[in-house]
View (cartoon, rainbow, N blue to C red):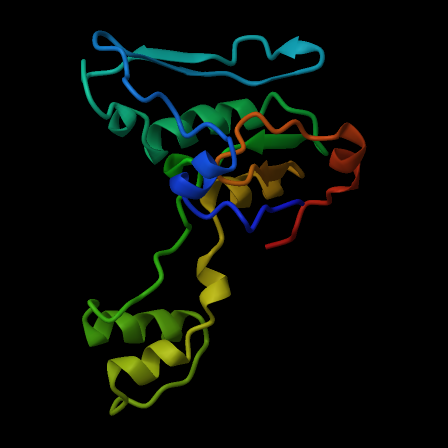
Length: 180
């Protein structure tokens, strides 16, 4: 899939003439809407619509990974195997199956990770040594991708700041689900 490595932040997007969102958001009630469709129209009985709790400011906390994943699990049962779902990289679309251990973790918790992944370590090793043994790629698996793959459905994520990008359908046919 195509990824634009030039657009790294909102400043670069702005300088490239791309939108980075509303400058002065409207105050008042906010409605969260999630839906899925194709050239054939929207999928029947697949909308998620609810009123955000916050009236002003950042309302994104109302749509979290739990809300999105619950809705998406239902959607997966309505999609044909071999479908390609295109979505942006919102944090709630991208919750990882497992968190990557880091230096702020307790040593015992870091040791539990390599043990579960079949990595040998010495009890005397310090945190930095333990962390250097971890295959970071194994921790990049996203929950949505994992459950979609089980139903033979591919997730294609749009590059940052390219929400208007349209997926070429011939390209979509070439995308094969990766195996976990």
